[in-house]
Length: 102
Image 1: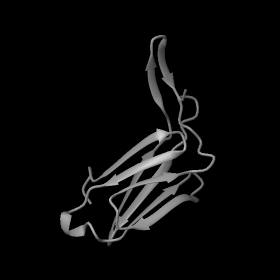
Image 2 (image 1 turned 45 degrees about the vertical axis):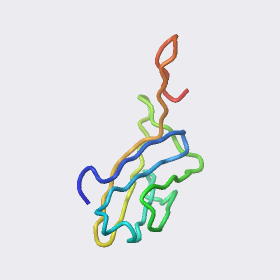
Image 3 (image 1 turned 180 degrees about the vertical axis):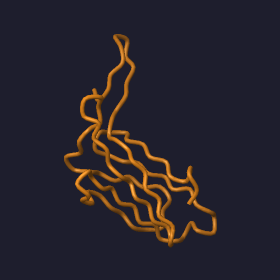
Image 4 (image 1 turned 135 degrees about the vertical axis):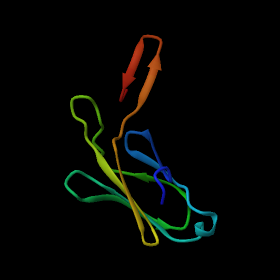
């Protein structure tokens, strides 16, 4: 997998949306997606051939400037493994300012 083959968004503070871009010949190959917390525990996983999935993490700890809680997303396609750090957060701009996590 190349550097830009995994896209992560956190549309909610407990949902991870993952898109894996692979060679068209690999579309039907099984992919394994794991979310790992800072203790090394797998807190969410999925296996299948789809290229886009959403995973829910129970009791996810949000990222903020005082507590930058990070998780690792591990994607395995065949013999190729890619790990990416990410944090759960939401960002909003309202009339009265910028909101991080609500």
